[in-house]
Length: 317
Image (cartoon, rainbow, N blue to C red; front, side, top):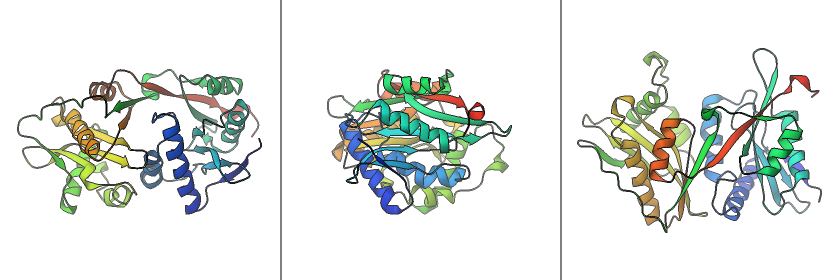
């Protein structure tokens, strides 16, 4: 079957792509073989806002002549391509076409003038790995390049209970007055070695996070330190269509680490959405410390979603 290719240029296209991801996520057994709609939202509303869209490709869809979406590519950063394929339409021919499309428009020009493209692929996907190999890609082997994706069944598996460290309180994020503390905690957790003067303030939080379609303040969970400041945090995105949750991000301020606070906020989030009817959660990590935490609250078993890299300076585009 020949498919029609088009770029996402209007809000209607975006919402159709979002519905496509919800459908495919369930068809894939609620496993992160494809993106969830929550991840697409997070990219659209937050990642593009903080990184800018300079040099980033336009998301592309493939449709049947009747208008059914069968595949999509999303960038999630310049030079990156994430392929989403409906399992009923997956074929070497379609994946070949998608990789060729990525080579044409998704690459990033590096400072030295060379072109590089990263296409992400699960280690358990022989079809995509074979296509990428034929196109001259090679899997990156660095541990922190690959994304470890973990899920937890909330119906059949009991949620772990990690006691809250003495003096700390686990609760929902407060009102607007608490956003500066939440933003500062995020900066300290993810930029521990950066000078304080590089901090750009907290306006991004209500603009990029709290405006997202699935944002709920009762699922924006924080650990409050004895001094009243945010010590750890997680934002849990719950999709009541797929009945799944997606944790992004999770972090602890360096001075409050090794107290089990990240585990505590994650488990509190799982308890909350289980009460809403959720059947599973997804959480992904790159670094060794993060994955130790995530394994403790989910499972040692994970899907490995790895970057395959090709320097494009040697091919004609």
